[in-house]
Length: 636
Ligand code: ADP
Image (cartoon, rainbow, N blue to C red):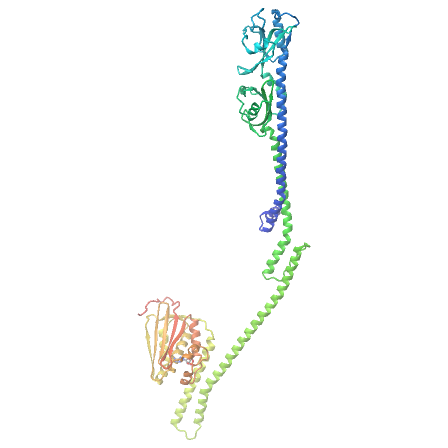
């Protein structure tokens, strides 16, 4: 089961079918492209709307922060708004100071200290603190370190009946806001000034209700770009004027501003944010949200879309592979069919039942196989006919050869037999004397020798066949063999008064040969040399050679071979005209047999001849394996 599963995977994705791979690739491409597009577009749109939402939320929180800051300050102002119920210009009585100041401090816990300042020089020295309550270590106490505000802008303005809010001042790492408010009598005369210090960290505390995710925060920035309040105390008084939102708002003092991009916030993280300008206080409330959190949703969506895409891709791939496999099946069947039919099996039939063009293709392929089968039968027939006609030609050739053979043999036998017949007739003569008898028996003996020579040629031909193949070969001294052959011709030489001169220009004349057949070659060459020369002539036989071959030369000064016969001399039964005139009896088989023997030994036979001058036959025989006899000893 497991193996089948792996086989399926191999066949589908790695198997050799290029067409299937192309199908799968196309399916995946067609399937996944819209998927990628859809995914990308939806992630883009979600990101866009999410960013718009985030900006709106940030702006909303920043506005609420601004409102809260304003409210805290307004509350502080209203907490020190006081009007006495008498008409006198005389200040509040000293025994009332503590009740008044401690009461205000109890009402508004955001004040860090509160003072009553004299404005009526008739009763006290103007600008001097009359009483001061502070929050030291968390509890309210009377502070004896009284100050003089007589020259301060805030006091002077407030002494004239105005409310005054100072610039935030930094004390021991914290910003404080000084608020001054006049105390009026019933005649609207300022009888004293209340001076309160508000801890801006208190405003920061009020921001805690405003939620911007888990990590978003709000902070206040002064008109000089300094951070007034921040949940991170370390950042108080830091210069934030180069942050894009803040610089934009500072430039354009009535702007609510959202930044479209993520930027490095005051603490260095990538954030998005919005700022709101607080007109009355000249401050900016900034809401910032670290991208890590605000983008978490987008990241989750992106991951989910990616997982969805990959899962869909997997499904598409599996589906595409399956469909491609199904589509390929008939094509694979057709391909196999074409391959089998192409290799010559025209009985093979392709079975495809898809009911479409592929089935048509299979039907056409089968038709083609049928057609090819017919053609093949035709070709077989032609081959057979060709073979038959060749056989017939061979038969004809053989028959011609046979006729030639019979004619030659009949003719050859006829001549000596007629001579014998004629001689025998002569013997029947009544008046025949001894001398005549001797002459006639000599003629009969000569004819009988001719018949033996013809029979010998025929026997040799039948022994070695028309094509000789070397067998039973052994190392033999060819010079010695030739010597034996010439010895056998001593009688004929004597009769013709001719002689053979043997020479040897090589020390070692040993070659691996078949003795019986090579003997026939030299018998034939020497017989011809004697037969086709005049009486009293000399025949030269020489053995020479190299380390690998021996060359035997048989030369005579006889009738020679006419130019026109030279090409035909080695054909069976061929005899030149001058040869027939010279020697009536001959088969024309000797040279044919000799050539066949020499060829069979891997050697070569050829001649040089001139009519009426003489002929030299050359026989070249490879020495072959000489049974350990050294090849050296070439006589130079
Ligand atoms: P045959 O000698 O019986 O005719 P061969 O096959 O031995 O047959 O020779 C074929 C022919 O080659 C001869 O008939 C002759 O015409 C020619 N021939 C062979 N040897 C010689 C030679 N030494 N001188 C001249 N002609 C030759």
